[in-house]
Length: 299
Image 1 (cartoon, rainbow, N blue to C red):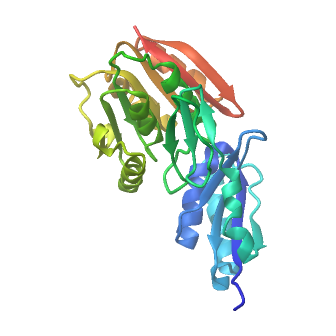
Image 2 (image 1 turned 90 degrees about the vertical axis):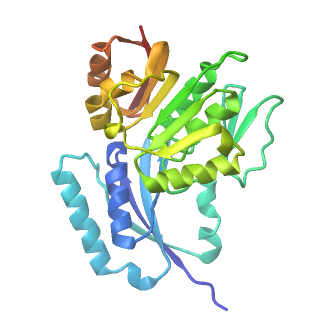
Image 3 (image 1 turned 120 degrees about the horizontal axis):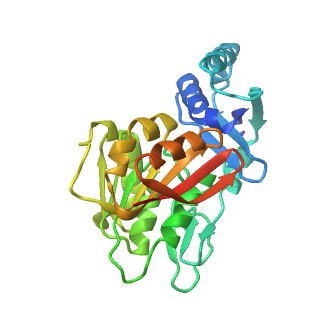
């Protein structure tokens, strides 16, 4: 029997437009797209896959073009954002997308890899198995990678250390923290689908019972809480980082670390100033392509 073909509909965009374009592709084609960021070139490509010829039509193209124009009108920098349609042979699309995802080491303590990669860990190295899916976070993106590096670097073996992951997405940071020995580890996300995926990933990695995971909205959480954490990860959009900074800082214990990521280079100075006014000191920072992330310490 003749194998079916698959169409890949791709839009190369600037990093800040990734989320908006992903939502657009999902609304047009009814299935979650795949976003791939090339750390070497700084290029981000958002792609949807369709296997029914009628799904890729003049009407669908017009919807995409209209949606891209609307995103531009809202001030989001897209770049050229030219729509690309590629027909793939059946034997290609079943496996080829996996080539973009590889095993990654963070220090000598942590290995993050997709389930199809057979790489063995070093002696004493913890392993997180995570396949690309609907929720953000596989370790491939510079902002996620920075957070993983800092979680590894901040861990002191034999010492009790707690961690809070706000906007957990795939759950990768919280899962890695549990594997590395942080206790307790608390994680939440406002998106129900993200929480479902994070729970599945936690079960796959054997840490579900050691991870406190819930669907919660940061904006509706109490301003002040009794429980403080040694490390707080907030890989959030700029608006939340600024509007909810008091809530975020109030969850960091004195002397604790706050990891802020998902920030564009042009946005980072404003974030650093806002958190500096709340008594946090920028302890470490890294720029990678158009992204900048930072570790802040609470005095």
